[in-house]
Image (cartoon, rainbow, N blue to C red; front, side, top):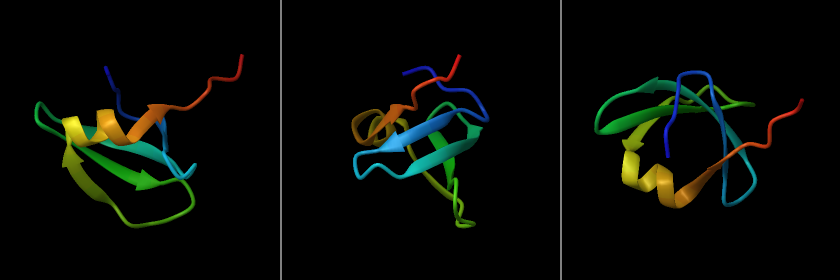
Length: 56
């Protein structure tokens, strides 16, 4: 999955997260309705999140 800063992702539980930073081996995410920033490995993101539907 190719990700860019600012992109929205949806977790398996339906909660939305914004991509804050992208690195070669990790991605930093923040909940859309929260303040806690966390980083995780790209592989975890690929298995646990999907891109949010885009509105035209």
